[in-house]
Image: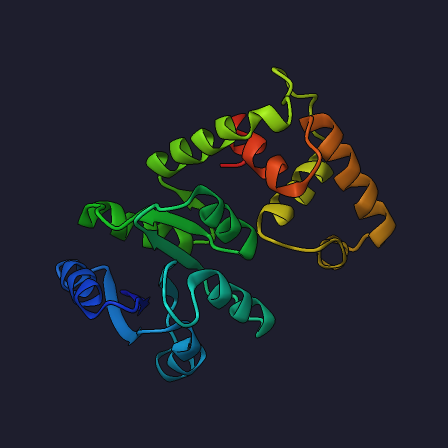
Length: 215
């Protein structure tokens, strides 16, 4: 059974190129397209995709805003961001906004199809090249904080909280997901920041990627 995909990109030639590439595979079926994030909900209702391929840089409603829109509408369809990799922080915001996968637009057909299959099965996907670039972003802000060379072991619950933090969940949303009080979650977050040697969630995610805690 093929995986139904929705393409969201403001450049028609890019959409045509990606669609033409995916049409070479018998595992994926492009069932819809949108040129702007504002069209995504209508496209989802029309074609019921199982995976969304989303551009980050769009002139009206960009990729981050689209992810936030999907979250507000409680849409749980996994999203892969396809990026030309302009900005480390923008990609990190994509992680926190709930994207499940990140690929560069020049990937091979096999890599793209494999990525679609990965997120369709509920797993995360981060292309190695993007991980490296995020780590470069970490290097650029190391003057602002000093991550410990060794990380104190995180508890299973702290790992759960960290994963939800990386998906962009607030303390309230994490407390609801884990059936714990918001005060308990705040304590877990505080412990996480302390163990990772950082002062905020963004740096926590960067350090967790660098240390291989988030995969």
